[in-house]
Length: 354
Image (cartoon, rainbow, N blue to C red; front, side, top):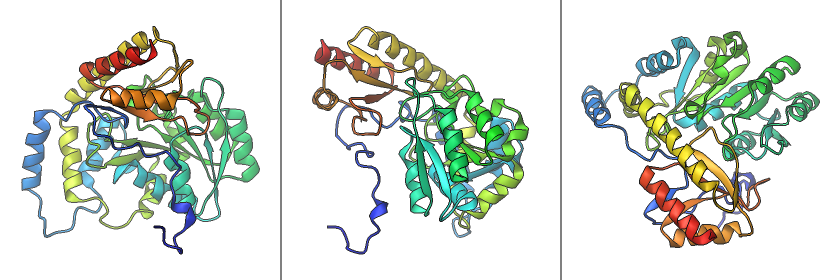
């Protein structure tokens, strides 16, 4: 039962949340197929033993921030950490947009970009994408300028399509508009390039958003961060509540950073398995789109996506049904899992489609 005084815009896009189905193979939420390595647990145990639980956490998360900065090759004053990338998005919108401001998104894309903006009182303007799911940069530039938008969102690799956006898209937005540009790189470590490859001077108006949920296998921790110029990072920090990042979260982030070599191997394995999935799915009656992330968007040919989703569930495999999302009619998305999970998915897919 809905309370009569509840804000109607709190409802997230219909169909966004994936059903929590009890199956053996869960390939629906882009999680890491493997847990952090044993050395993570060992390091985390040592760090937790040093936590003074009767004290507030380090407000600046100085050690974690320095570690993230070192891992991404930037200065500590160019990084701010938060509770998942969603808190980073919220703080950034509070700092650089706010009630009455306009933000521009290119659908289909990550639903929380629009949702968080709307919750904060922003107007959301939507533009389309080309047939390959890259952003229609001209349309986005025109929309930003027409609306005098405060922020333009670029998700690269894009969720849920996996599309890696040309760096020229970001350059056009910077050269032809006055908007701040949020580049969501939640899946950036799976891709061959990053917006950080551009001239660092551009970071005065670019905010790169990343997460520990995917490559670092810490979806259960909720840790994300932003990279930008020191002045932008200072602004984002003002949109965060004091002591927002717990001592336990900071410890988990530090423990993860200490396992960087293992993370690199895990990412390489997922990229390799992505290639295996792409090759074998190419032999089936379906359309798939190139992905630079840890998932693949596909559409069965001559078969209803809703029916396919259910038949996969009946065979113990859960994928994400995207058929009800804007611009994704009859589409499903599968997370790249372990070799065994991927084979279970392929076997079930073949059985249904052939």
